[in-house]
Image (tube, rainbow, N blue to C red; front, side, top):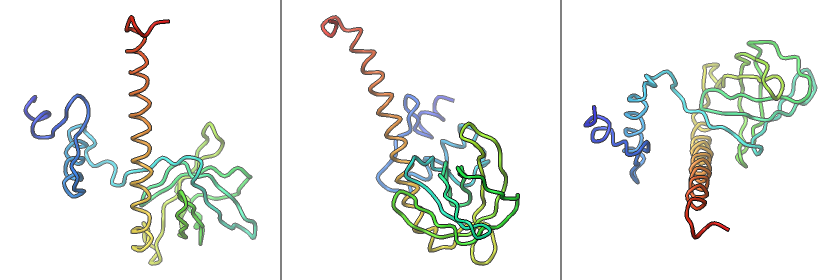
Length: 179
């Protein structure tokens, strides 16, 4: 077991060391997810968005603005502050997305909706120009680096927060750091 986790997968102290090459990293991440029993349940990784990701769409002649909660290459979820009479499995055309400055357009179908702390959360599935699930290739190629950027920033933020929290706890225990 120790050989498998420490040497075959490369987990060190709860962290996974990545390489400079993306192709190698995907293999490392895949092995780590498998070892942590992800078992292929999630085909696409979701990027949690901040306040700088939004969308605009038109429904029944009225324009609606939404705040994107998370997004992947297959789905996205959002909240829509104004009352919106969307029925499940309803298709929206030409949704305008602003993903941290990246402007794209895509169609989507409402997959489901549920009540969350911020109001109603709408989960959509992207639909490409052939009416199949997913994004068109060009849009996918544009969105992939942006998702990577968002996820990298989120990971760095978490690590920085944990580092500074740990650093503060260690400094308070040192005699020369006390007031």
